[in-house]
Length: 396
Image 1 (tube, rainbow, N blue to C red):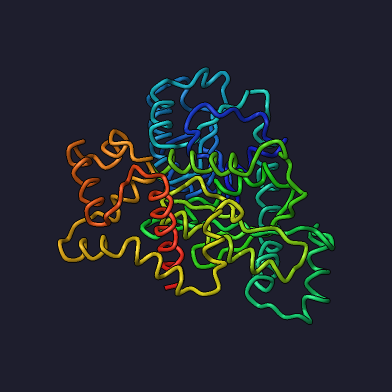
Image 2: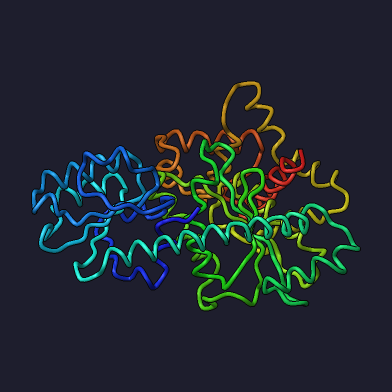
C-alpha cells in the first residue's frame, strides 16, 4: 500500500506543506476524502487522507481541534487544511497535538483547487496498486533466485527477466537483508516504509522480497544514486528514524558481497544473514557489510573446526564453568570490558554498576583465567575466542 511519504515524492503534490506530525509520514494511504464537520467522521475510513476548507467553521479554532482529534481517533492517514478565508491559520494547539501523536498535518494554499488534489491522489493510488502487482512478480523472481537455484533456469529465464527489470548481464549484484532483532516484538512491516524511503533515495532501482520477517533487496552495485555517501550513512539514517519512531533500535541491516555471477546471489543472501547474526551477538550496530566482518571470515575459513573450538575452550572454558556453577555473569562482563577498551568509567556507565564492582570483576577474571587483562596480546586472544563463540552459535 502507498504511504504519505510516497505521495510527497511526487511533483503533483508540492503544494502540500507539512507543518506538524513529521514522524507519521510513513502512515499507509488508501484514499482521500473531503470533510467539513466532525459529525461526518463516521463516514471516513482508516488510512484515508482528509481535506477541509473550514467552510462550516469560519475560523472557529475549537471546531477545527475537534475535527482533527476525531480524525486521529478514526486512524486516518493524515489531514490537509486548505488555508484561506475560512481557516486563516492553524492553531498552535493542533500543531502540538499532531507532533505528540505523529499525526501528519499539511496546509494547502486556497488558490490550489481541491478537485485537482482529489484527481491527482486517486491517480497516484491507482498507479501504486498497479505497481503492487508488478512487485508480486518481482518477489517471485527474487525468491527463485535465492531459494530455488536451478542451473537450467539460470541460463535462460531468470537472466532475461532480470534484464527486463534493469539488471543487465554481467551486473554485480548483491543482497541487503533487513530484519528485527530476535528479542523484538515488532515485525519488519513496522519499518518497511522507512527502509523503502531511504533506499529509493540511494538506489535507482531494486527488487524486493518479504520472507520470514525479513525484507530482502537485490541491488546492482553500479546503480547507486549517491556514490559520494557510504552505505553506512544510509543505514544510520534508517536507524535514526527507527529510534525516533520506536524509542529503541531493534532493526538490523546486513549486506552481502557483490558478484557478477547469478549463482552467487544466494551466497550473498547467506552472507547478509551472517552480518545480522554477528551484529545481534556482538552487539555492534556499526557492522553493515560482510566484507567488514574481518577476523570472523578468517575464523569461518578454518577447515578443521576442532582447532577453533579447542582455542575457544582454552581461553574461556574456566570462565564459563565458574558462571555456570555460581550463577555469575563474568563472560558477558568480559565482552563489555573488551568493547570498551578496558575503561572502568565506560564499563561502569554502560552496565550501571559501581567502579569498585568493575575493579573486582576484572581481578576475578584475571584470577580465573590466569591472565593479565592489560596485556594487548591477551585481549586479542580473548576477542578472537568470543568471535569464535559468535560463529559457533550461528551454526547451532
